[in-house]
Length: 371
Image (cartoon, rainbow, N blue to C red; front, side):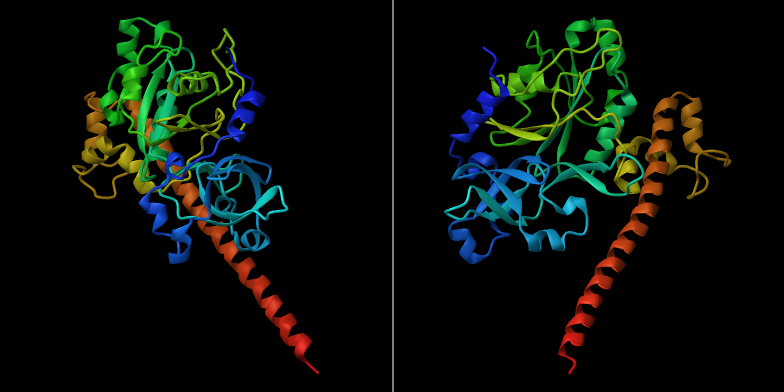
């Protein structure tokens, strides 16, 4: 029987979690002081909601806010806790809301550029071992979107796997079409169906006990259904997609962490906009096959557009590089170059404001001391 979200949350609230159950490792342990290592005052962020954080710890599931000094020292939104983060926190005996004092160093993270004109980095999930990139074999399928997700995985510290879901909707010939040139993804690819159970054992076999996974993909591809299959319970809410264009509603509206006996899973909302917040090198690593051809170009700074002796253009004309793949590579490269320029200006502005504020405080201190 399907659990309501309220019942699931109520059940989770009663649980007591050991740090290893939550994914604790030596990586986080060594970042603590000698005194803190005796009894780590730590918890893991399971959910963020408008400045309120749900923390899982040996004392159970609690709500917490960041301290005033923590907030003051944050230079950007990505400095604040997000789902998957390990934090140092405390709870007074007479309080129902804890206080977060510090975010421990992140083992891994995936992020995108904030939607719209902002230059801020928007974290998707942190301290993860696997990024499960889910697409569906219907009108929603987009190779370009998969390659963008693979780009944000480069250098993130997490391993990607591409899941082709709803494989029961297509035949073997169509599946081969979807799978063509999949070697360029350079990661595992699993065909699944949450309805029939196809591919679920194969997908589960990739992960080790205690791994943290985050599921990403657009709305309607079946992320929550797959999560329920892996968890063996209906904890993640699901909804139907539109039959006309295979688009789904945002069933998942926030990033939330779920636990099973073996895995820790972070579900994320479907993303309509996936702007890259990565550097140029990570894009080149994603398209390393194109970069390999580029090494044979006559000019070291070849743009692969109009220069003579361009090995990349020759490979495209010879069918060795897919033209659409090269187009995706070019778009991502331009996007990251633009982001790096804007981000550099934005960080410089933030730094100037911080020092201006501090200078003002110092001036006021000396002014108060004047006779």
